[in-house]
Image (cartoon, rainbow, N blue to C red; front, side, top):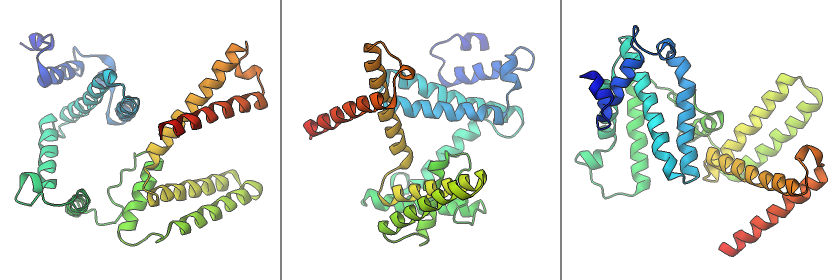
Amino acid sequence: MRDELIHDSSGGMERLREIMRRLRDPETGCPWDIEQDFATIAPYTIEEAYEVADAIERKAWDELRGELGDLLFQSVFHAQMAEDAGLFDFEDVVRDISDKMVSRHPHVFGEESRDKSAEQQTVDWEKVKAAERAAKAQTGVLDGVAVGLPALLRAYKLQKRAARVGFDWPEVTQVLDKIAEEAGELVEARENLTEAQVAEEMGDLLFVMANLSRHLGVEPEAALRAANAKFTRRFSHIEAELAARGKTPAQSDLAEMDALWNEVRARDKADAEKSE
């Protein structure tokens, strides 16, 4: 019966779970899968989540289905390891997330009115999450902000939490002043301090930059991803133009590459003006 399920393309979620059970079977499973634990699989989980985000960013809808499947498999993998260790199983995971979604949407599944703005629903959502944290004895303002988040995103979330209780600059100009201050300290650190102290000052500057993003209503991870994509596209233009001249970047110099960079930047600006 189980072999039939594994080869049944219409087997759905139960088929995937059975595949995972077989991969982790101590006697007949895959040696690599058997050896894994939560810590060794966690980096793959993060990577798969980013690949989902990447497919969405590129509007690669034909790839998104596969990337979502890879991410789903990570959840199944973790749940199977938990079941093997006697901690919980996949059904517990499904029940917990279902209960959480019902609890957090009383305006859909309960008696609260839906007649309120998206902004008010966001406020209500935060109240429910605060109550959940309190139930878990997470009484600190910053409790529950995952340590494993990308550092820039975690900085953004930490500052957002602190701002809810009034620990925040009221004006964006004050954030800009702080950035100038931190940048000045970084210059001083570079000239006079140890490598560790320079790294600390660099971290302070990045932390304030994340705060500026919040004040401007910009999600910093998304902004930086877009900047990375723009840099990649523009540098690819440099490589293509150099290749047409029979060169590689290593055979060029900064003046030539900078001229090509300015060329594609001007083209981007012209294209943006046309689309306005």
